[in-house]
Amino acid sequence: MTPVLISKPEYSIEDGWHIATASITVNGKTHQLKFKASEGPLAKGFEPFLAAALFPAMKIGQPLQISDVISPKLLSATQTIQDIFHRWFPEFLKIPIQAEPGLADEVSHPAEVGAFFSGGVDSFYTLLKHQDEITKLIFIHGLDIMLEKTTLRSKVSKEIRRVAQEIGKPLIEIETNVHQFADKYDYNGSLLPSIGLILSAQFKKIYIASNLSYDHAFPDSSHPLLDPLWSTEILTFKHDGCEANRVEKISRISESDIALRSLRVCLQNRDDSYNCGQCEKCLRTMIGLQAVGALERCAAFNKKIDIEAVSLMKMRDQLLPFAEENLCVLEKSGSNPKLAEALRFCIKSYKYKKIINQLNEGIREFLDSPQGYQFVGGKKNSIFKSLWEIDREWLFREVFREKLKKMDQKFLFGIVRRLYDTCISK
Image (cartoon, rainbow, N blue to C red):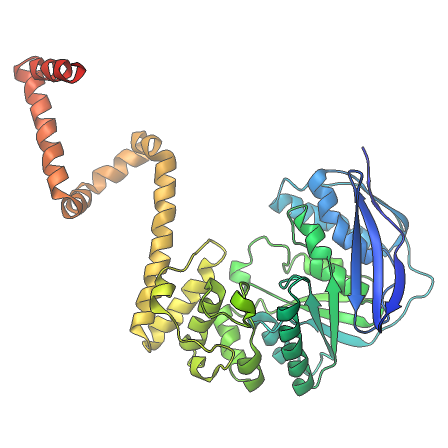
């Protein structure tokens, strides 16, 4: 079995940017991974590239080989990382890692505390929550904004630098192509840890803002179970913010004028817009702001909420908790009944579609089961009433047809049915 190979990292400085590169060879194909940081120093080790290569190696079920030492703490933790990820996603196989545990000759003792900062709800919440402790912010190019989108990157980078300056925190910008490498193997896990590890010469702790609260922390690439496991003897990763749901986070950041001006949530960025105000994520965030009474003060959105667009939002299981949290607050406040009704319609439509899909997949099997028989038996009146309201002409026709069939069988011995079949065949 051919192992996945990581070459010895190389380092350089170009136009003041610190660069680390290494090649990862998978199934005979070599991928050049690159990290480019606006500020150094960068870590001199294999750990960032191990983090980037682990899940692709698991995806193809091949060993991972490193020709040097790896942090003993991280190397040991990769077994637990694999156990968790394989349990969540069985197609990612557990693999051996061929490396020697050990520390680099020159072990630094950095003092900085960082936080990955995108300008979104989660990262703003973590920044405001730990503002006194955090000493530097980290913004990543090539994660949610692809490197080739230079106009949008410039616009967002300018605003992120503005936030950092106003809040009094130095900003490190990172450019990386790790996301493109990850896409080839259908995963996006460990991207933030790999970037954090390349900065471990500067930071003793880095905060990773949570996407979900504890009650909805479904398996994901960034998770309170996984993120801390990427820590080393030098750097600790802290998954932060699971104690608050999205509306609670929005309520917290709505107290900050800087956040309300610079909040960035859009993933579609139509026409290179900072926030398009039309996609599901923009609408979801705008609803949350409306629910806590902060939308009119939020300069990050220059559009009003499109009520019809809310009712037609595309929903999926991972987004449902956010929508239900928004609806709960809207219903309690009673401040915007039309918006609440549109969101309620969107949620119900999604749930009804799920029911329809499940019934389409197993309706016959369900109706033939004891549970199906019991359900229909107990719901006859409501089923009949629903059919009557939906299509009473069809119901009359079907009932008459069944009655005629029984009369034909009982009194005419099926003569009408045979005549009907004869006419159809001609």
